[in-house]
Amino acid sequence: MLPSAFDLAYDELLSRWPESTEERDVLTPFGPTRVHVYGRADGSPLVLLPGGSATGLVWFANAPALGRRYRVYAVDLLGDAGRTERRGTPLRSAADLTAWLDALLDGLGLARAHLCGHSYGAWLAATYALHAPRRVDRLALVEPTQVFAGFRPGYLLRALPTLIRPSEARARAFLSWETADLRPDETWQRLYALAGTLPGRKLIAGRRPRTADLTVPVLVLLAEHSRAHHAAKVADSARRTLPRGEVALLPGATHHSLPLTVPEQLNERLMHFLG
Picture (cartoon, rainbow, N blue to C red):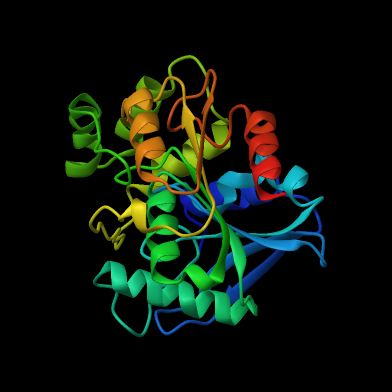
């Protein structure tokens, strides 16, 4: 069988990762999970969770720098596009997602790890840190959605056509609108646009996590020109509710251009926070 357009884009983006990157399929009760592993063998573990449709490969611009200090584990999310498969226990709720992450960390042999997520991945990371604080050393939330505030109505209206009648063209038009003139990596744009057309995707949306109950140190990185939400309002909410929080703005970035644009700024902020 010939590879699909999505698979071709996936493999092309995978080739942008360092040559020593390992591809692992970790068995969980919900199916095998694809993890891209790179970095120092003795480095502190850093688990990266992408936004919806982005796949774990989206961190390719960050992995080389992060891998000099940490052992990086970039994950294809359960229920989303990528090479994580849904088999076995059905995926129905946020509790299933946290159980999946428990099994994933167990399968990777990680008793504890730093956890960093972008967008939907940030919601999942915050939800997991509340579920299992003993397993999270430090928590980084990059442009978190449905954590401190809801989406802008205009953003949801723009996104609606990609949800009702998904197509590569509609996804590209949506990306072009949100990222303005930043023009994220072309291969990744193709991968993201094709991801929405794949059958069987099932992103679980749960309630907003109670961030005031987080006991781990938290970094919140927000995009100056995000169209997903009002960055200033999210920053105010984060500062009010996080007992051990640090909030920073990434100049020039938009929601969907992260983590591809300004990777040096993101990496610097993240490594300074993680120590």
